[in-house]
Image 1 (cartoon, rainbow, N blue to C red):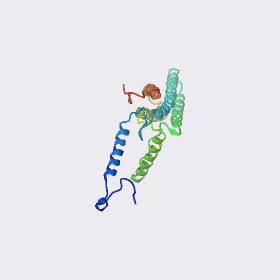
Image 2 (cartoon, one colour; image 1 turned 30 degrees about the horizontal axis):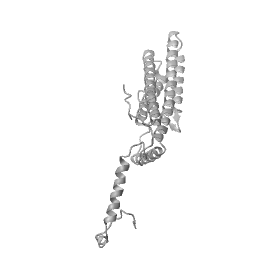
Image 3 (cartoon, rainbow, N blue to C red; image 1 turned 90 degrees about the vertical axis):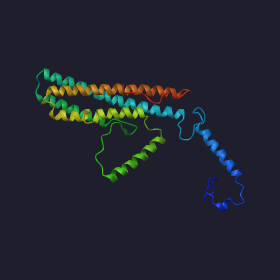
Image 4 (tube, rainbow, N blue to C red; image 1 turned 180 degrees about the vertical axis):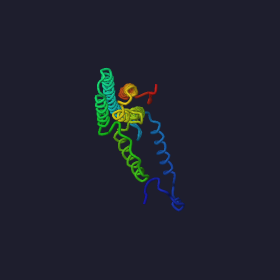
Length: 245
C-alpha cells in the first residue's frame, strides 16, 4: 500500500476531507522542483548535473586517454617511417626481394602489437570490429553494453563527445578497410610484387598517422583548456570544438 503524498485517491477518499493542505504542499513541492531546475551551477548542483569538480576529473581522465592514444599513433607513425625508409634503401641497393618481404612482415606484426596492446584504464583504445552476431546475441550484447555505459557514467568514465569522435576516427585509420593494419597485412604478402604501389601505400599510411596525431593533439589541447576552465570559478564555456578543419 502506498502511503506517499502522491498516492492515488478514489472519489470516496475525498468525502469529508480538507484537501487544501495537500494542495498547498504539492504547490510548494512543484515550486522547489522549478527552483532546482533553474538553479545555477555555481550553487548546489541539481541531481544528475555534474559539479565543476566532477567535470574537471572527467576532463583529466579524457586528457590522459588522449595522451595514450597520441603516443600509440606516434609509435605507428615512426614504424611506418622506418619501414618506408628501409624499403626504399633496399630498392636503391638492389637487395633481394626477401629483404623487403622480411621488412614488411615485421612491420605488419609490430603494428598489430602496438595497436592491439594499446589500452587505457583496462579499456582497449582501438579494439577490432566484432564479428557478425545472431539477433539474440546482438540483443544481449547491446543490453550488456548499456549496463556498462551506465556504470561508466556513474564513475565519470564516459568520454566527452569530441574525445569519442577523435578516437573513433583514429581507430578507422588504424583498423578500417584501408587502414594501417589491413594494408600492412596485405603488403606483407604481396608488397614486393609492385614496389611502386607499396611505396605509395606506405607513404599514404604514414601521412594518415601524421594527420591522426595532429587531430588528437588538437582535441587534447582543447580538453586541457576546458579542464582549466572547470577548475576556475566560471566553468567551461564552449562544450564542443570543431576538429574537422
